[in-house]
Amino acid sequence: MATTNKESVDTTIMNEEVVSAEEKKAEAKAANAKAKAANKEAAKKNAEATAAVVKDAATKTAEKTKQATKKAADTTKKNVEKAVTSTKKAVKDSAETTKRKYTRKPVKTVVLQYMGEEISGDVLTERALAQFAATEGAVSVKTITLYIKPEDKAAYYVINDQYTGCVEF
Image (cartoon, rainbow, N blue to C red; front, side, top):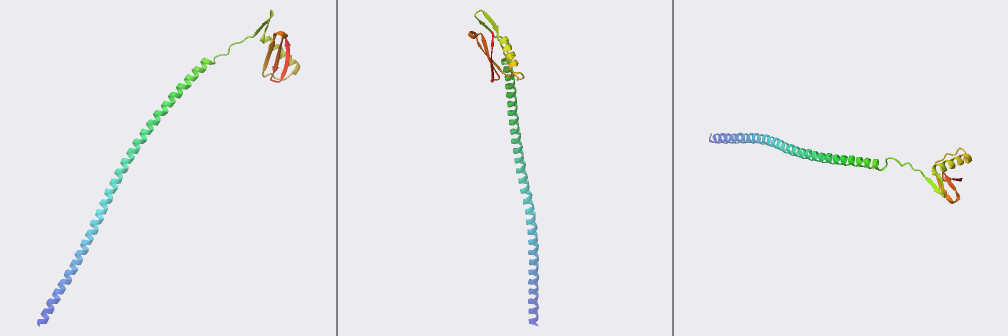
């Protein structure tokens, strides 16, 4: 019986060791599960913290971009206003200058006086046009140039840079 008691004690010890090993294994699993849960929680908190940092950085960048855009828009607006003002002034000045320079053409009269005789340039022009109409008929007159030669008592004409003739005083 002494072997039986010893075997029974050994078996009991072994059973206790197996139970202890299983309990340790169960405790290890539980600890492992707790560690995984803690890791998940830590990862979640880390992700939330990272998201918060990224969101904060994005907000700051957006605000800086907004301010820079506003500043650029203000600068552009000021430049456009300056350009419009200077253009309006230039147009106004140009209009005033044009009014002053080119108001009305003066009326001109050409009168030839030679050796006691006097004849108007308008009379010579009318005579030249009448003679031209009599000889050429329906040709329209665009330009006329008179060359007056008092020594010949005549005016020579060129019409449309093509037709020539002579009229006497």
